[in-house]
Amino acid sequence: MPPSNPREVSPELTRKLDGARGGTLGEVNDDRPRLPSSILQVVLNLGPKRAASLPLPRGLESPEIDAEWDEESQSTSIAVAYERAQLHLEVSDDRVEFHYHRANGDHSDVSPFSTQQTPALLEWATAFAEDVHRLMPGLENDAAEAAAWHEAGFSLYVCETDPAQLDLIDVEIEGEILVLPWLGAGTVDQDHVDGENHPIELLWSPTEGGAARPIARAWLNPRTDQPASSGLPGVDWDEVGLPEAETLAWLDDVYLNHHVIEDPATAVFFAALERVAGLDRGR
Image 1 (cartoon, rainbow, N blue to C red):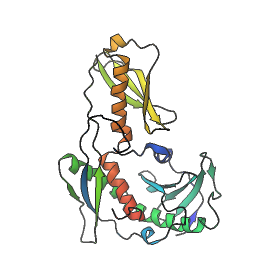
Image 2: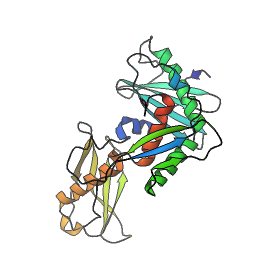
Image 3: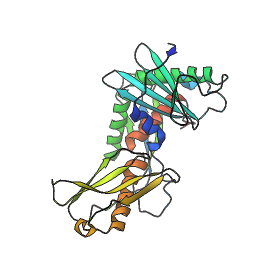
Image 4: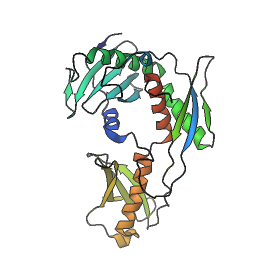
């Protein structure tokens, strides 16, 4: 079906493609103790993969891709991202809508890509979007189930399916940083907050179930793709029961595990998207 203009892709999808998908252990370049990485083999019914048979334009062969199912609208948001621009698509059962975002984030109905690149990119992206929409939300469910199998100690996941040509994908599961439990007084939790570079706040309460207040903030340093953190003004660190420096070091490790290193469900989901797109480079 031909794509048409435009309905806005979800802000959450844009946020993820702006750098929050996660990293790899090779990028976490330090001596922190960590669990070993492992390979989870997943067998999925991905069906026909039309985009995988279509060429991407020269210079646009390696996009970052993401997809998100919206239960309320029964539609799938797709993002195809490059450093200089993004193509966003919204797919339902009967139509595909699209628009662009320039490098500064501005919405545009006019392609920022060249007149030679745009038709082939749209053809590929439309095929990819329709292929992914056909798989949703089952693909998200399969990824979550595969992650649960991995957590249970299995190295092979096979989806439930009728007889079909299936895809076998080797997915690298990154080992997490080994983090001690909270050693200060009281209890802690974390919460996402508004702001650039995906910030979170560390919330502290002196008693279980008591009123929590923020004591520190962590975010992703865009220059290093590693966590940065700082204590908030007015915190009594003696009351917290852990010095500020130790609290921030602990928070950095928590941020790495939850917001930098890719969790198993996300790793499986992106590996499947790359197979559908023909971007898995023989994974």
